[in-house]
Length: 220
Image 1 (cartoon, rainbow, N blue to C red):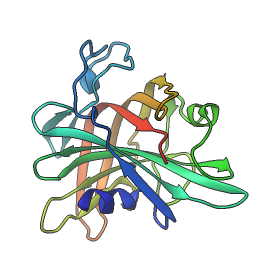
Image 2 (cartoon, rainbow, N blue to C red; image 1 turned 90 degrees about the vertical axis):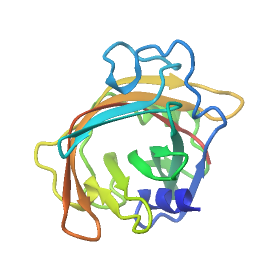
Image 3 (tube, rainbow, N blue to C red; image 1 turned 90 degrees about the horizontal axis):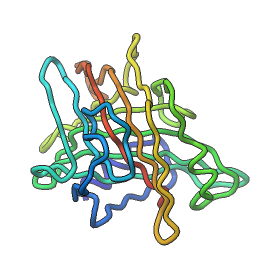
């Protein structure tokens, strides 16, 4: 499946990768608590995931549950002893065409042992503030933004594949969402700008005026 192949690119050289999508990922909950990515009020657990940004001068907005837009969580990393790593992503995509609009990922994070991190470990990894962009796969405590062209090329565009010069990834709010039955989640608001480089070529896309509400999940 194309979604699994795309999510596997989150961490270069990752030894294990797993993705899942909950039944309610595409539903827009009532009382969205702040208006999604374009809002400025305080987000809550019910805030709808969305992303608003300008790419090469063209404004784009994606809201989970609106039109064909949906989100999927991705979780990748390496399993080992005495430590293993995790990277968490959230992708906005088109359910009808499987095209990836934009993908946000944070990591790598290191934990003792392997498996699903404990609640306090998982929640402790996410904080407000400026996060530097990764310049290669497998870097710790970095951010990455991706896009993928649709068929037939499925070209990857990534902030990782070239230099950033003054661009930013700034987490402004965080909401911890504990869940004793399934998986814990973290929802965060981020403002961002970046250059996305064609990872198999020389072209560049410029993203400005970005703001998003993103959710990550502590799954397998």
